[in-house]
Image (cartoon, rainbow, N blue to C red; front, side, top):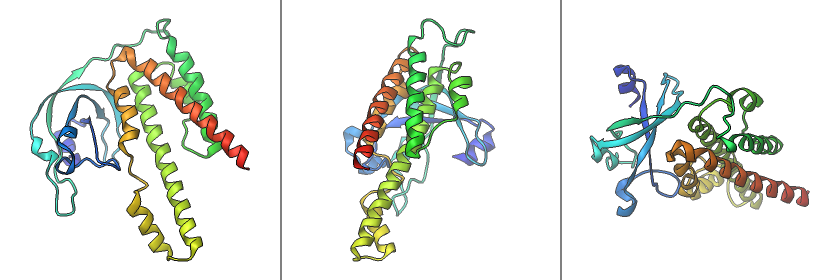
Length: 243
């Protein structure tokens, strides 16, 4: 896919939302028939480079799949061997007014205040967080779609760190029992759950946000950040009680 993007000069690709197997892998041949569906709205990414950096540019409406068989094509090891192609229509994103925080956007100020509180807790937990300049210089002026994309990337990184820490804790416990070598302990933990895989429960909260209409996306993001703050405060209270 990257070769085709670079050779064609388009530097764009679409991320279509769909259900997945436990662990986050999408393998239609192994999934129930009712789960073999693509959301009709996805995001298109740009700024493609050889180091595979990209950023969300907006949303698209899927019009027609050009090679649906790619959803089922895998090699002997079960890895996908082709990527999906589709005809799409770009969906317009309404521009923000010139002033930083429009009066109609009652959600933005509270969202950023709540997010900054969450940021402080993430720092205390040693988890991924954004630069402070994001809240003062960037977030007040960007669209709700870019805010949602930033939240998605941050949550993916955070969940990865948490899963890796849990996996390392499991390995430590197994090693303390003295029944396995370190390599065997790692193999057992990885067989149970790959630390880099994210399950459907994680994506089920994010996909409606990413596919929402612009006027709905801000309040939805605000609710997600508020819920995450509540969970983080509960984690902090539990941590302090156990210390």
